[in-house]
Image 1 (spheres, rainbow, N blue to C red):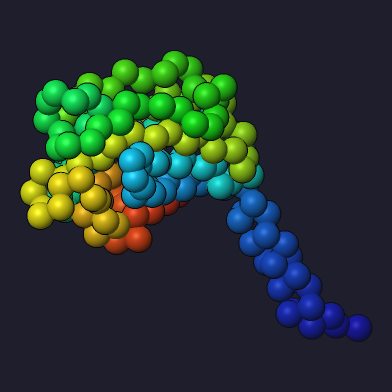
Image 2: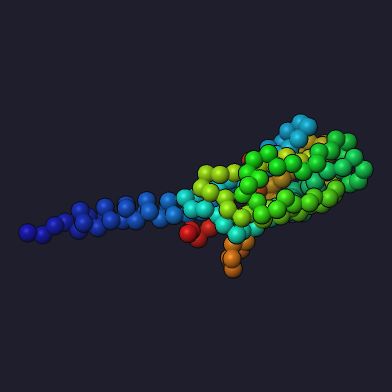
Length: 171
């Protein structure tokens, strides 16, 4: 008796697809415009812990020339907010120092478990647009997020919806 090819082959493919999907260690980054504080959320959306990694935010390639405004005297406009970790401090190797007018920020991840998030508040200003103190999703579009894991570097850019997804090779 012959067993049809589809009966044997396709269930195996479906199982392989499920296993491959769950073995990713993707990272989602979201920018949330707020008053008086803006927020960034870095979430491990995969099934594997993110270890010994660096997440770098690079605003220099944004549509509106975005910068971090952390002091009352400097490159920013009107309202400023210092850098403050609001979630996931324990996942970081050290707290980054952010200076006024800076357009890059590094988060050194020691261990970020699946589903866990590192979130921080800060003020982001644009240097090109009409409303310098309000940053829309389209103004952060083009800013990049870099993930360095061992010898692998992955880059994603923010979309007009103020999100970026870094897809990794898995774990």
